[in-house]
Length: 365
Figure 1 (cartoon, rainbow, N blue to C red):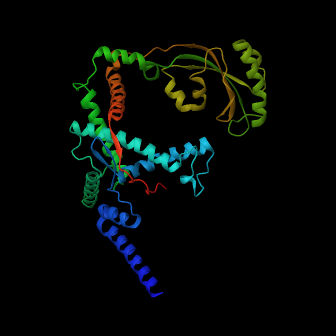
Figure 2 (figure 1 turned 60 degrees about the vertical axis):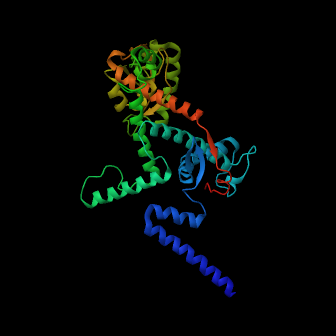
Figure 3 (figure 1 turned 90 degrees about the horizontal axis):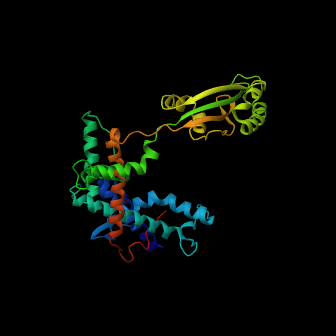
């Protein structure tokens, strides 16, 4: 009994010492204490990408980002119960959620490390190790604490978490590298011919102007918010046959429709002058109107105390915002796409080797 008590006392002392170290040493101390308590060292190298080490701490940040994706993959694809205590270690088609999370997290780490190596090559970063990152984080949080004590303005959080600071640093470096490569005077700056061809590819989603649309709105207000004379249920019931008739007869059905008690028909125009106010004042109706084909009706919807459906009388193209007037915007879109393609290619070319046994006992949840 005495030997057991002494063994338990030694274990408790070790845990208390680890907790005390974490409180006393800040971020670096936390990592050391964490390693003692869990036998997982955040600084331990778990993989190498083109010679650059990947620390367990980096991978664990990806666990947090990818966990929802992994859970969804197995709950939606296999009907697994994410609340089951054996969820992460149960195999589905030979793959456990734990192994799947590790795989997709390693894929994400490989991409970011390939990107970091490119940032280092172009002078955006000197030290791309996880240890160097934690030193920067510690220094930045110390600077923020001092600024607060001095009454100086602090932009962003008073103290960054590792994950938030990682995102902040990577985002800023991406912007700078993108501009250095694809911006004006950049090493891979596109010429005008390239930008014009790219404009043609993206003009529909990004540069298409609002169509000129003429609409009729058929509405029946109901008691309460809409101020009508009928109940909400009766308003919808009365409007459905009107919609069916308009769908068959088009605008010609308006005269008969206006005879329905309580029904109001309103002519509406949607174009580049009215789109902003329409999207704000009547967002539900706007969502139905913006893509409604000519000579067709929308479904019946409830909006601002009345049941309504729309009939599109006519639709004419509003054209496109011109390339010449928006060349800088085109250049920005091109740069974003070209940057992602470049990182895709760098990731494919990169060699990643996992450290044997490094992830065997790593916890994912």
